[in-house]
Amino acid sequence: MEKRIDKINYYLNIAKSVADRSTCLRKKSGAVIVNHDEIISTGYSGAPRGRENCIDLGYCCKKKFFPDIRHAGYDACRSVHAEQNALISGARRDMLGASLYLVQYRTDTSEYEEKPGCCQMCRKMIINSGISKVIVRINEEEYQTIDVGDWVKHDDLLEGKITY
Image (cartoon, rainbow, N blue to C red):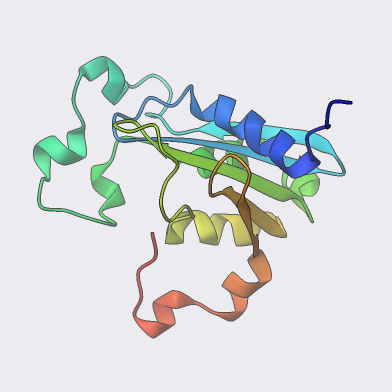
């Protein structure tokens, strides 16, 4: 008898399909917000509506114009993050207590992001949305569950740490 996929990997697989629509040349990201076993919204990384995507331009603006900026420097990036796009597509009342499923993989290797997670801005938006947990894919079978309450209690910025 064929084994049925578990719910978490089911939603992570959907997030992977959403990530495949990403227009970032460096990393593909997809997010799915689920509450009470119902998909509330999805989002992938890409330029704001109406602007040309990096994939269409043929270059990464951040790398071209700000090559010395490593981690952070999100103001130099054209993309709206997958989490942000999912959050603005849903109503807060539907997100209270929900879970956000996140998949991130590199375009150059197609391998899942080594340390998947949310940047500080996305963390703040997720906290304010009322989402209670974030599940990030590690590989095809494994994932990590993050309690959003931990982000509220332990603010990395107060310790001088920049995440992501």
